[in-house]
Length: 81
Image 1 (cartoon, helix red, strand yellow):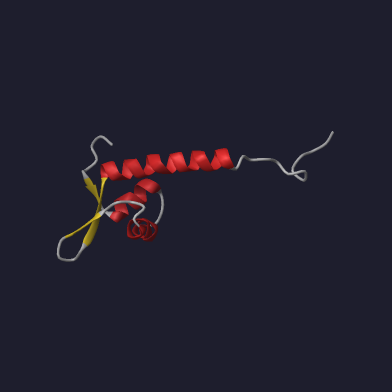
Image 2: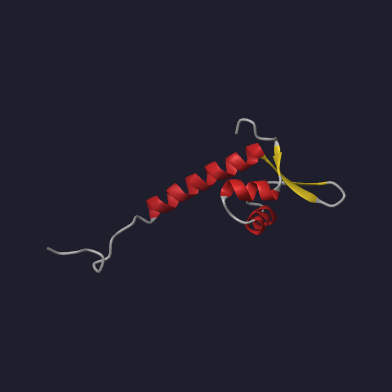
């Protein structure tokens, strides 16, 4: 991520992932997305490298899911001539 700061706010991460800050907070609190808590007010920051690793991991998990659960059209979806 050229030009990207080393650490991102949860709002920044939400923008990158096109999701809500609440969803990113949940990912962080579950430990799915590594983050650090800094400052007296305990603001969360996600390292850009960790975000990229998370995205790569989600691609791999999605690929595995698709491989294990191939899309098959149901009989109702298929048209007959």
